[in-house]
Length: 320
Image 1 (cartoon, rainbow, N blue to C red):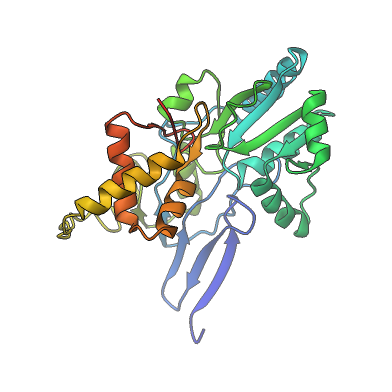
Image 2 (image 1 turned 90 degrees about the vertical axis):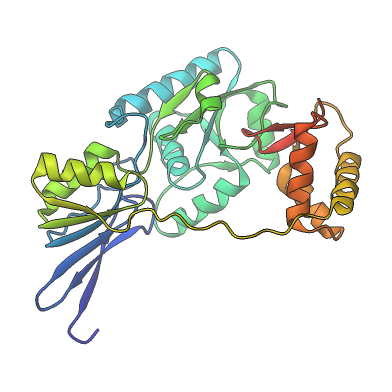
């Protein structure tokens, strides 16, 4: 573009993720958002483009400075799955639909002979990977073949993290993420695996890029900037410090509308032991003419009064 050259480099995060190198007559700058600086079963580690200035996102797993070795985590996941099969349970991995889900499919395709059943949302993303040359073997959970595999009990299942499988007694769930919630940690089985660089990987990436200055943003930007300065001797600066924005003046909600909305939602949630998806409840109430803010507040009030029980894990409501 005129005298400016822009080049894309693989970021190693998910299919199609890139970093941008911007080259001018007197500057060489790299902008890197989400990246992964280690090889996975599907992608190679992020490319390193040496630069004078590096702008780097500081979002990294908070569990520790260094994630466990990837190979040991995946080996443990396979062992756990095979143990589940021997116990006549379906090993079910709850994870992000994009990135980690595809690596899990490849993991079981490579290391086992188990069929892999995936949630329809994950199946759609898998198809994009396949269209771009990434071989994945899986069965969409919405098909009869998938139902037969689950009944047979010789398959691994992969679902989005917030999908509720409590109604399926034969499923045994493990969470695969670099950011486990308290509820997920309390569930008993978490595999620490992420498609995003941890803190140590980010520092290694900076070291190999050899910049003169690094601007960090988002997440732990202050921590990363400080460590870059202290450990690597490179000028680390926060690109934009957090600003305290004044809260807007929100007019009070219509109490009559709130009461009517509470009655409407209560009329929808009638079946015990059934989880009602929050998004569906909101959509139906908005479809009846209630404002979104009214619906949100009505749900909050019902939960506070213990008329409904909200689950963050399923993002849904049940009767107490």
